[in-house]
Structure formats: C-alpha cells, structure tokens
Image 1 (cartoon, helix red, strand yellow):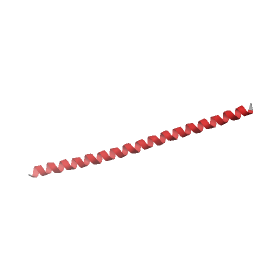
Image 2 (cartoon, rainbow, N blue to C red):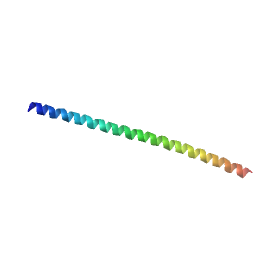
Image 3 (tube, one colour):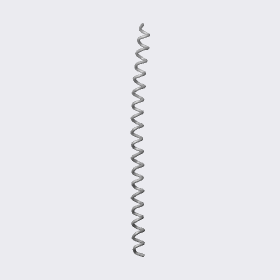
Image 4 (cartoon, rainbow, N blue to C red):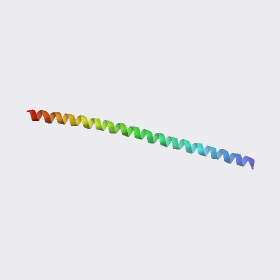
Length: 65
C-alpha cells in the first residue's frame, strides 16, 4: 500500500511538471507571435509612411510645374 501511495505521488508530481512545461511553451509561443506581429506592424507602417512621402513629393513636384 505504501508503494502504491508513493507511486501515485510520484505520478502526480510528474503530471504537474509536464503541465507546467506545456504552459511555459504556450506562453513562449504566444510571446514570440506577439513580437513577430509587432515587428510586421512597424515594418508596414514604415513602408506606408515612405509611400506617402513619395506620393507627396510627386504631388508637390507636379503642383510646382
């Protein structure tokens, strides 16, 4: 009976450890995705601002002509 209780406690600890590992992996994956999305947003914003500046220069040039 003592051996069974000891085995049960050991299995409980292993399951809790595995659960903690899976939660950590999920959190890391979420953070990685968040960082990638923020990078893509900043990159898109920079591209749009550059395009806007280019169009503004063209419009200004045409107006001057």
